[in-house]
Length: 206
Image 1 (cartoon, rainbow, N blue to C red):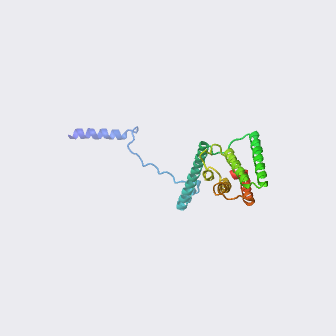
Image 2: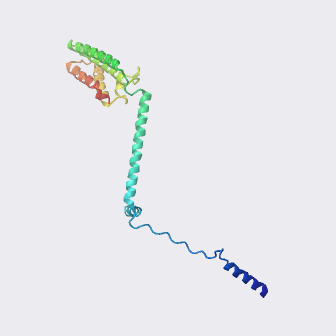
Image 3: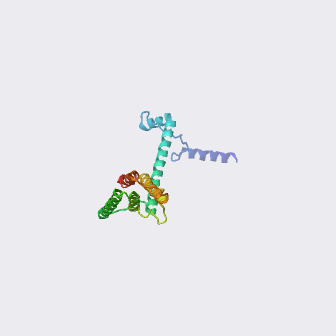
């Protein structure tokens, strides 16, 4: 490039720099101002920094508690669904039906008392066993099966523990009398009557 061309290029460059409509210098951006020293966000951040490990343990503890609570809710719902499928939930009875059941139970209990008063304790205990089966059928519909023995019923997981124990005690006395040939006297009768009274208590089914 000759001197004339270089001179023309330099003159054009100067005219371009002299044009105030164009910007050729870009200053560095200003730094962001620091947060106020006494602000709430800064105080919370400092708190988390100083108590970081403790906060993590608390967070994990809350998560574990939440998971356990959710698992408990799911378990309860599953057990209720299983109970509905198996017919283990208490039967919904009307007041009239409950009155009839109570009257029938009272009549059978009076019959058992009469048999015991006559010294026929084995027959009286068998009446209690049959009435206990009726009570279980009323409280847990569709739980009993025709093929179940007394031992099978006494081991059913769908029965509350107090009911299983009371029924099992009555069934054992009847079983020893029928299959073992053992005599049933007043002590065994009184014991079975107490177990039957325990089985019919409403709190035994909760």
